[in-house]
Image 1 (cartoon, rainbow, N blue to C red):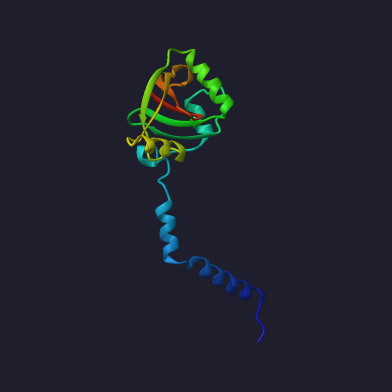
Image 2 (image 1 turned 90 degrees about the horizontal axis):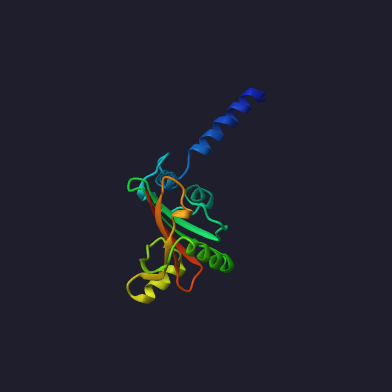
Length: 164
């Protein structure tokens, strides 16, 4: 019995369609659970680590080595943890000092902070880190107009807190 070209092609397409549509239920539900709603700007969307996106909110004179941050549009605030190279961290602290006198600060460590800051916070027994805070208005872009930037002691990390 000889099969014609269109019949073979149709059979292969149906078989391919059947194979690709049959996947394990766990795989489908994992994909569905991992999808975030499009256009989601909810406060509980979790921390972000996109440097370019953060640079829309702030003007930093040096390229960060690492960033992690959260924005809360409802409260019109954001909180960013930024790590610079040792050399640039020193330069940024000098830049920040031009905006006002530093003050001693003790900040609560969030669960999404980098491991180094979480470990430093655990050493205090209070989940806090200490640093020197400076006015941050010179580093902010609208809609954020108020804030402070804190260099964490013994690190190259800064915590930037801003609001509008």
